[in-house]
Length: 209
Length: 209
Image 1 (cartoon, each protein chain N blue to C red):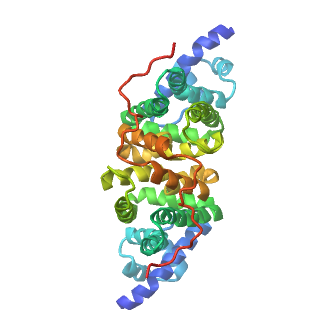
Image 2 (image 1 turned 180 degrees about the vertical axis):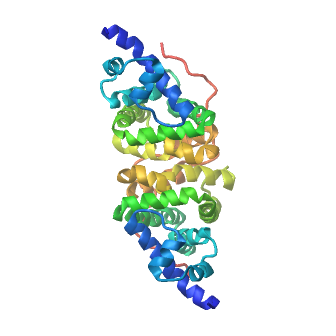
Image 3 (image 1 turned 135 degrees about the horizontal axis):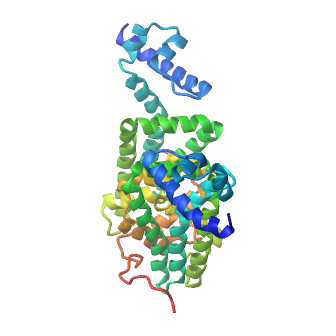
C-alpha cells in the first residue's frame, strides 16, 4: 500500500467510522471498521497503526471546520468587535446544529473527547493562539487596557465558555442564543480592563442592621 | 414512630448515606442504608417512603449551605458590586474545597444531580430568584441600564457560569480563581448594558485584501 493509497483511504475510513458511531450510538474500534469496510486487519493497521490513531483522525475531523472558521475570521477585515463575535458565533452555530441534529451522538463525541483529552488539548491551544492574536489587535485599539494578554485570554475564555464548551452545550443549549453572545462580546469590549472596579473589596461581610 | 422521631432520624440517615457514597464511590439505595444503620426496611420506609425521597434529602443537604450563603449576602450592607462578588465567591470557595477534597465523589454527586435534575432545578430557580433581587438593586443604582431583569439574569448567569456550574468545576477547576471571578464581576458592572456595542453587526465576513 503506497502512502498515496493510505492518504486516499484515510478520510473515507474516518467518515465510515463516524457514520458507524452515529448509527450504533457507541464508539467503535478498528476491527469493527475493518469488517464494515471489507478490509483486512493488516490493511487497516497500515492506515491506523494504533487504536489511538483512529481516534486522533476522528478528533481532527471534528475540529477541522472550526480551524477554517477561525482562520477566515482572523483574515477578515471586519471591525475588531465583529471579528470577536464571528470567532465564536460561527463555531457555536455549527456546533448547535450538530447537537440539535442528534443530541445522543453529540454526547457520545463529548465523552470521546473527554476520554482522549490530550488530543483535544491541541485544538484548545490552537483556539487560544488565535484568540491571542485577536486580543492583541483589540489592545492595539485601546480595548482590554491594563491586562496582560494571558490575563485577558483566561478572563475572556471564562466569560464566553458557555458558547465554546461542548459540556455546556449538553446542559444549556436551550438558553444559548447568538444575540446573547453578542451582548457578552459587547460587555467585554465595554467593560473588561485591568482596572479594579471594587468587586474584590477588603471589607468583610456583615449583616445590615 | 412519631413525626418527631422521624425528624430526628432523617438528618442522621442522610449523613450516613453521604458517608456511604463517599466511602464506596457509588450511589447507594435505601436497603443499603437500612442495613448499615441497623434499621428494618419498614423503619427506613417510614422516613423515606420512596427511593426518590432519600435522593431529595441528599440534594437538599448538598445545597443547604448555599442557601445560607445567598441569604447572608442579600441581607448584608456591602456595596452592590461586593455583594455580587460574595454571592458567587462564597459558594465557589465552598464548592472548590468540596471538589478538591475528593474529586471522584464530587463527580458522583454531579452525576446524581444530572440524573435527578428536577430536584436540582428548584435550587437553580431559587438562586435565580436571589440574583434577581441583586440585579434589581444594581439597576436602582444605575447599573445594567436598558436591560430587563430577565435579560440581565440570563446574561450574567452565562458570563459567571464557570463559577457556578459543577460540570465546569470538573473540567476547569485549575483555571478558576477568586481574583478572576472579581475581574468578571467588575467587567459586568463596567460594561453590561442594553446598549448595542456593535458585536452583532450587519456587515458580513469577507477576507481582507
